[in-house]
Amino acid sequence: MTHRPRTETTLRTHIDTIAMNGDIPARRAGFARLAGPQPGAERVDMGGVPCLAVGDGPVLLWLHGGGYVFGSAQTHLTLAHALAAGGVRVVLPEYRLAPEHVWPAMLDDALAVRDALGPGPVVVGGDSAGGHLALAIARRRACAGVALISPNTDRTGRSATRGRTGDAMNDDATDAWLAAIAMPDMPPDDPDLSPLLADLAGLAPLHIELAGAEMLLDDGLLLARCAALQGVQTHLHVTPGLFHLFALWPDAVPEGAAALARIARFATRCSARGGST
Image 1 (cartoon, rainbow, N blue to C red):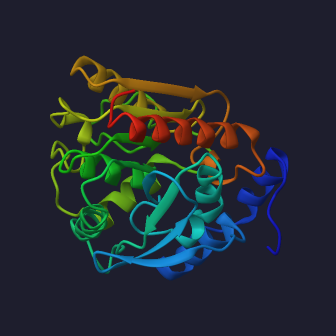
Image 2 (image 1 turned 30 degrees about the vertical axis):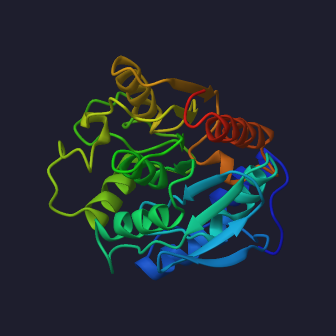
């Protein structure tokens, strides 16, 4: 398409018309068409990893979603610009993707970017698989805060919503297929695959945004409970009725713009207070 959807109704029609099947290059092209035309950004190199960056202010290191197989920094620039409008500098790494590079290649890239950003306050965040990756960074490096949109957190069957149908952007079979490509031969209870089972004590303040109708709803709810029980300062917001990754289209879905504004406020508070909100 040559223009972006402007309403939730036209967005849902757009999603329905994009084929996400065939081989992996075809699916990657489909995801790019799904994300739609994107604004520009500054190209930077961080720790040897190419990145895109937008905005000025405290740094928010954002990891894009796409199941570690699809997506790129480029597909998430509308989201990044909406975050930057809240007064943060958003850095989006072009981390390596599977199947060409399996875990921990993407983690190694993300950690290289985090290390290159230096010792100052950095908030780390991400959507879907990017949220999973942000959690992995926050468990290994000091962060001022952790902001997640619909993260994958559990592969052990604890979620009560993974069997849902009707999520416009995700389903359990595709989600499991992507995990098998990106993180092959890992047992379900490995904390890198299922961070719900990780030691989260000492994690920086956590902000989670979820969609009420998405398949991964319970992944996020379970993470919020687990983190809170381990003493993590936890902020949770669930937007009823919407689907996975609704915040990719803040120009079409006002609730997506609101979610990103909440994340930007969270990031600026965390940065100002060194991780204490």
